[in-house]
Image (cartoon, rainbow, N blue to C red; front, side, top):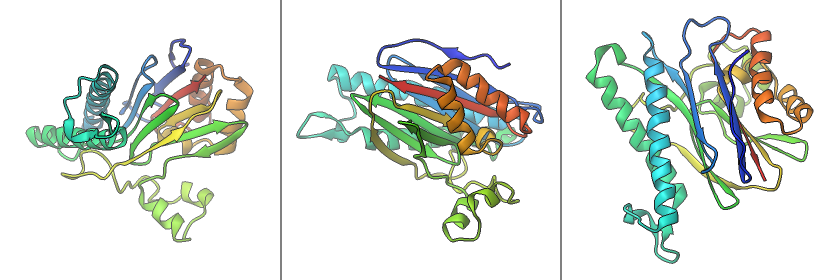
Length: 267
């Protein structure tokens, strides 16, 4: 049983856990969150000699710190990134800020890889969120995912940046066939693999009792979306046990990769 991280808050409740799985010797996933601010970051590292662990930890620590600073500037009015200001509202363009923060993180990872030969080629996927009012701002690069569960409907919000997703779009694979494709883990965007990264950044309006799932492909490669949806429904908003249950379910189905889950509930 993996150890959950959980707290209770009136606005956004968050729980999460990460697990090595049953086949990998190391866990290259990394997660963190701040329930009070509605910030969450999940990263799935890539690279030999445990360099993926370095990349994912760097990404999570960097993004957590910068996104906290961003919200602090937004709430206090002490805005240092004036080029990101909306001149009409005197507030930060959060979408641009999320995208730029991920780009800055990419630069840091590339520099770190260049500085140490054993870290050459390291990279990481990332999904990050921050809450502002009733809107959730999302940044995303790679094949880790974010889903929305609303009124018993389960919907993927992010689009995988992967070779197999491109082939699905072009009709070469169905979603089910794609899970067994030999290229299923080839990502087309990630932090650290090139000097520049194009991150998706968007926002969604939240409604009362909405639940958000952020996860690495260690979950979605092992567990179908309908099974995840049924699990969310069965746990009735009890996030910490649900996080553990999903990780255990992925392991029971083979656990071929590291598994990370962050669950959020908006009220």
